[in-house]
Image (tube, rainbow, N blue to C red):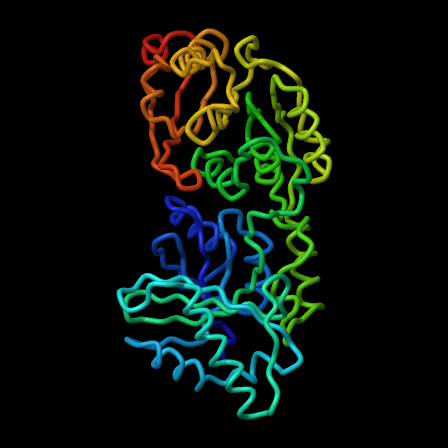
Length: 392
């Protein structure tokens, strides 16, 4: 008899396909893409492995019940009828995380309160005591998702968002989300088979995620805790076997990963984060202004970066003489003049600014940086002229 069960991995918009590929490569079954989510099947060990290894997942939840509802009383009654003693005791703590997209329910906090009432009332009626709520560090995190008249109840196996890898100890203004960085790298086709450059590396997140992909390092190996470690059925021995097995699949990297930033504080923070991730042997970070640099190798270079200017920063964070048009034009000029034999990708939420790069992107992929609609643009810098390239 199979011990597999359904799980759902949540992700960012535009990453569903690459997350589904990750899950399949990891060994998940019955993989189905949704909107900002991918459902799949696996056993308990695979749930541990998914949390440890999936680079583009934000959370892994385990559905345990679903029902239709129209009123708050139906919500309460259905939650009350569930066998909560299988997951909780009066001595454990819990929290509720609710997401609501329904005409019948307008406030997620109200839904959370109603679910909490049903659970504690059930324990009071059956055992005379009730478990306590702990929103910061609960023993069990319960996920409620109401879409129209459908309610799905799940257990959150991850806890804090999986973008919180555990290696970033220092940040700059508007640092890129780790899941976003990993997703951009995978969308760009980065596989660790050539040299890599992030010419505006900030706190080093893109560099760190690039090195972990190149070396096939479990992305959450530095994380201190997952929510499933507090579950009553947590199998510590199995989890340790999953960790050991995943670490044995790492590979050596024989190319260079370089990062530049013109701010001394950014260079220091990036170096601290890289060291925290135990990746200093693979990543070199230097204080340089990208516009004053040239390609550091004769080999092919894969470049992915997140320009530090745009709508995501307040104007007060920019120099008073900063000119968006000149900045993006300088990006284009530097790529054309100094970086032949380079595939250059960068993300921007300033869609108008792409016009000033002065190069035609070979690809533009729609993604979101936080709430900002953005584009991941690719520019292919050929060795010599493009015309000569195709005449060979």
